[in-house]
Amino acid sequence: MTLRKLIPSVVGAALIVASVVTAVYWTQFRFYVPPDSCAVLKRKTGTELPPGVSIATQPGEKGLREHVLGPGRYFRNPWDWDWTLVPLTVVPAGNPAKWEWVHSLDESQRARIKAGDFKFQGEYPQVGVVTRKIGKEPRGGQTLVDRASGEKGVWREVLTPGTYRLNPEVFSVEYHPAVVIPAGFVGVVTNLFGEDVSGEASSTGTAPQATQPPAITAPPSGKDATNPPDANAPEAGDPRKKVEADTMTSITRPLAEPGERGTLRNVLQPGVYFINPKLQRVIPVEVGYNEYSQVKVSEAENNRISFSSETGYIIKIGVTVIWGIHPTHAAQIINEFGNIDGVLDKIISPQLRSICRNIGATYAARDFIQGARREEFQRELTAELKRVCGEKHVDVLLALVREVEVHAPDERGGEVTEDLKKTIQESFLAVEKQLTNEKQREAAIVKATLEEEKKKIDIARETIQADTRLMVADIQADGEKESAQVQARANLEAATIQQQVAEMDAKRTEILGQAAADVERFKKEAEAKGYKMLVDAFGSARAYNLYTFAENFQPQSIKLIFAGEGTFWTDLGKFEEVGAAKILQSAGTHPPEP
Image 1 (cartoon, rainbow, N blue to C red):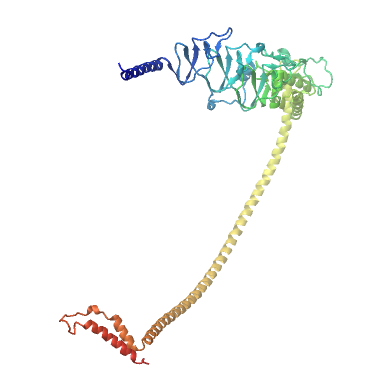
Image 2 (image 1 turned 90 degrees about the vertical axis):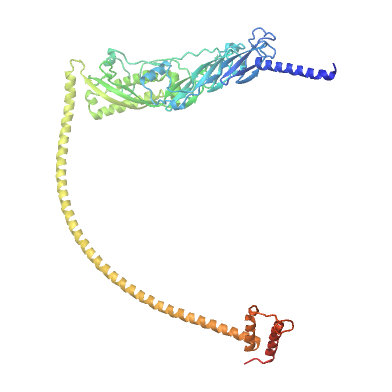
């Protein structure tokens, strides 16, 4: 067999082998990753990993690969590689159209905030907290690690809303709602890790223990809450000047700066923040003014403040306090009291009761029923409560006394209380009734005077109307007369103008006729002068007439009859030319006519 015959066979065999290899490679080595998935690779052959290493980082090492393959088409040797399709990690972005901004918290919401499980309603965005399960051991036993460190532990960084390709065998993701601070709130941030304010660094990942704020004792509960204080209890100084509560001294943890563990001085303004909940804790605090009331809700729930008056009667009042927190003081208040309820339980409520008891002891029972003295008590209560709460960075706008009850000291049936209130009220009612009668009498006099003045006004109105009608008639007659005179003068002036127009029209016609005659005369004279100039140019009138005859002569109208050569008719054309020339010649010899 020759070489030329072997070449086609070798080429055909090579093409067959190439087709088989391509088919095997396309069917056995190819795999597809859908758009919503990624592929986790694991090499089945190669160099064994070093002891303590779980992820292969070198090309020829055997084991799990940290990086995954995104959606698309890939080719891998199935004898060397194994792959598994897993879903992509998707951090939801939420739906802003369904966000519910809360402007004021009710009691149940405040209780949930206190318990630490309150969340605003709506589909808010989330963050992904990533934990690296495989990698190097963290330095110093840290729980939070940096993303680029490759160490095991929780990443300090969080995944913001989006889609990520993460290896589920290397990473685990926890989803937490993003921090949402609605309008009317600020966020108080507490660093769970970092350097302690005292200088001790926290790197173990253990959350700091909450510091105990200074406790302010509340008023006695039960029976003592509604009874007046013991009159024999020692009290130093003037009770109107000195108002203070029993307190338990305790050291408050100072505010932290960025990088330190504890409550940060700066707060978060309204907005959405992607914060790692394992690194920082955010407490939403409502700023602005709120209402706090100690009143009688029902017979079973009576929160009125009870104290003894100067005259020994028991006074029970209901008070509503309008208070608020400035954003610049929110962090300090949360750091000291833990939550907003601490402000109510440890500042406003006990101080309100203490101030009412101390200031109320200087007023008589009658003063709490009279308007002026009661208002004075309310002003003193508001001023003192503002001062005491202001020292704790709590703003008090108003303390309003809403309900007052006066009871006898012995509490015997309540008739004395009713008689006292009734007597005081009746005395005030009698005075007010007398004032009312006097005002009614004065009103009757004024009413009679008013009716008299009304009648006078009606008479004056009729008089004015009659005078007005007369004046209107006179003015109308004068106007009509003046109008007639004006119309007559206008007609006369119009006739005069029309006569002048007619005269001007006659003059115009005369001028136009004279102009037309002059034009016609000038035209005739111009034509005559033109003819005269032509006659003078030809020398005589006879020459001009011959010129006119020659110019208007039409030879085409002459019919020639051929009668043979040499006849008169044959030479007629030459004769005409010779004749005309002779005539012109003879005309030129005669002198021009005068």
